[in-house]
Image (cartoon, rainbow, N blue to C red; front, side, top):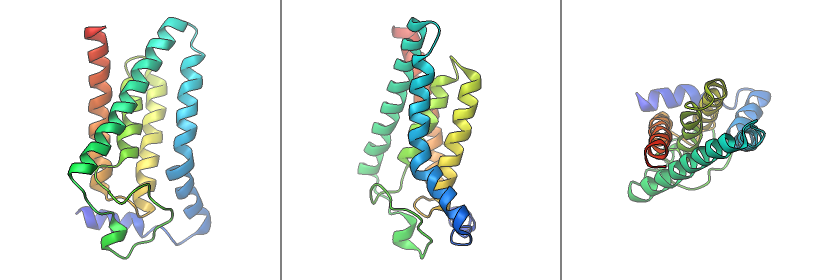
Length: 169
């Protein structure tokens, strides 16, 4: 099933130059816009103390998520689809390990942590995380399971950091 979904989504690549450029944008450049956006939003918070708290929880959640994803990749190396199959690869990956997706983990931790403070913004960041994850499968560098596990892991980490902060600080 993982391969079938991958082949379907990756089969969309290479059909249209505009579409390929959009996929590449969402996979490689859009994430930076989300990061800048969250900093601007939280730094412009009306209540500076709450804004600092929110920013702290979001940054810690994302950082822990990124670290955990890298740690799992180190101990559970899984090759990227392009190393196994003949795929359309629209952009170069950051490394050779596929599982779990560091981008999916990182960008799902953001809305997960944000949800407790700013539900509307969290919704839009969750949409952003979906676009990033899908584009990384369409772009040929991740299996769907890499993205799914990244979403789950990031969501759990974001919620865990929020509850830890609330309980201990």
